[in-house]
Length: 116
Image 1 (cartoon, one colour):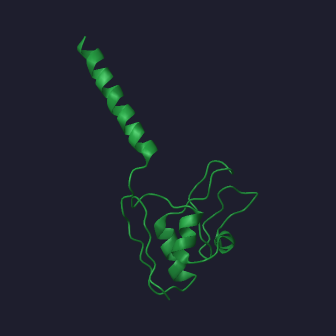
Image 2 (tube, helix red, strand yellow; image 1 turned 90 degrees about the horizontal axis):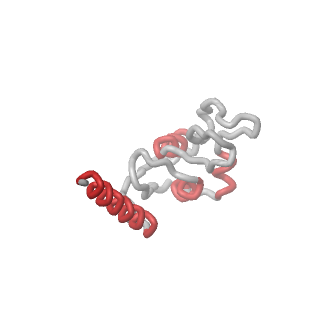
Image 3 (cartoon, helix red, strand yellow; image 1 turned 45 degrees about the vertical axis):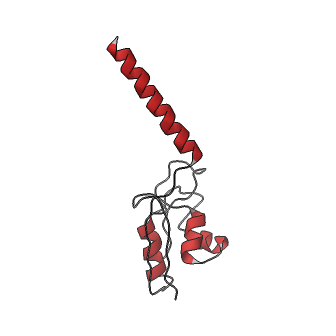
């Protein structure tokens, strides 16, 4: 099968259903069928035959997956021969840039207040 490449912002960052769908080259419905979920149990036990999401504290939280779990599932269950998850830094969004500017401004205000 194909070599899979993924762009995610850091090694420890979790990925959502859309990214998993791209990594596995499967439909959204298929990804949901592969996923280890249970309506009665928010965090079911690890199932080696399923795609296991990360721990959630609320049923309304979106499903998130560790890239290593996606790679394991692709190799072991879907039998995709070559699985490569490449990690890249994503460009900052406008909201992130504004938050950084606000943080810098707050730090300068704090610094001025501490001098008085």
